[in-house]
Amino acid sequence: MHDQFEVCAAPQCRSEARTSGYCPRHYQQVRRHGRLTPEREYSTRGHHCHVSGCHKSQIAKGLCFRHYQQKRRYGRLTPERERSYGRTGCQVMGCEQAHSSRGFCKRHYMSEYYLPLKNMQPSQPAARAA
Image 1 (spheres, rainbow, N blue to C red):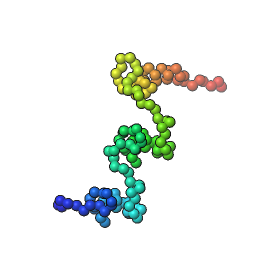
Image 2 (spheres, helix red, strand yellow):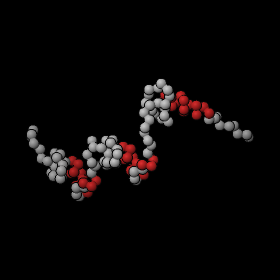
Image 3 (cartoon, rainbow, N blue to C red):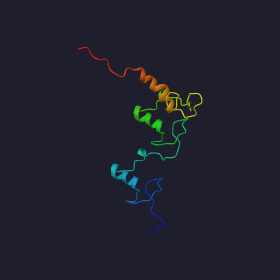
């Protein structure tokens, strides 16, 4: 076993070189595109989202999950579509559960909001007159 290994030839890469002087990631870039493609590489994970004011961790392309999904779905960031997430608890007095939907925890949402609405709707379609 060797204590030292050959370092990848790509600039600023400190991974172990395995094939033709490159680590597996950079070797695949050269193989597929004929050159290194730093413009296509993701930023390293563990940093915060690049959107100003967002402190969540990156998951892809320098963005957190919410902002990445906006770019993927709409081709741009959509601050006008974002909700304010100020609620933390259920709005039922005495309930200490976390907020889930429409101001309620999961249990109270089903019992106080969803099921009453569902019971108001007709369950059977009206019979047709022949």
